[in-house]
Length: 239
Ligand SMILES: O=c1ccn([C@@H]2O[C@H](COP(=O)(O)O)[C@@H](O)[C@H]2O)c(=O)[nH]1
Image 1: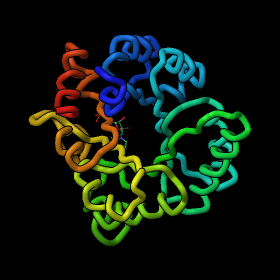
Image 2: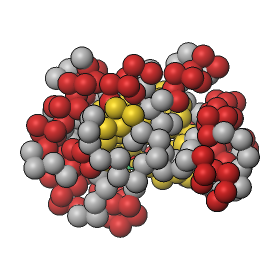
Image 3: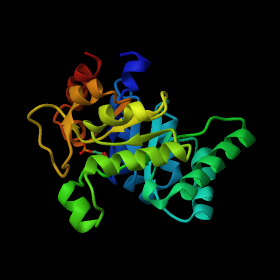
């Protein structure tokens, strides 16, 4: 498996078990380029991130940052110092908030002489559908319009890409920067459970729509044979 092929797939490590997290990275690092953590980071801290990075893979820190600009500037510096590769931000916090993380990350990277993480706006969670958007979040309009609006805001703020559902990339990419990075969770092999996602697609559909990176969790992590499950997903990505 080439690096380019591996780096189309991110495994979501949605478990709090530190040994399981590191064991899974060891088991799959020749097949999977990115590993995503969130709750595991909250429990085990930056030491866990460093232990994953030491395995020569990329780390996606899925923090979905949302706070006032001054606070997010500290996060921009912290995630850059930590050396992770992808970080998520909630665009509903507005332009100043997103710009503040982007500027702090760039400033820190320049000071350190390193790269900085790619910063990704989470447009609308893949568990949100039309009903939730209109009746629980009290946002009028269609899911597609809201995803587009947040994606444009993320680009205007200087973020590097977005997280969106598999079907949405194709519809909005012509309005976004040519080098924008598209991350799609909620992708599944045909016939696999949707779990708690409302806006899903197959791995192949996500790739055909222009996804840069597919985030897959339970389909691989909960499989009896994880390597076989990862290869099945990769086969659909690089076909
Ligand atoms: O809109 C979003 C944003 C992030 N996610 C994350 O992706 C994985 C999906 O895991 P599966 O087990 O393949 O369902 C998970 O870590 C989410 O936090 C998302 O699903 N939707």
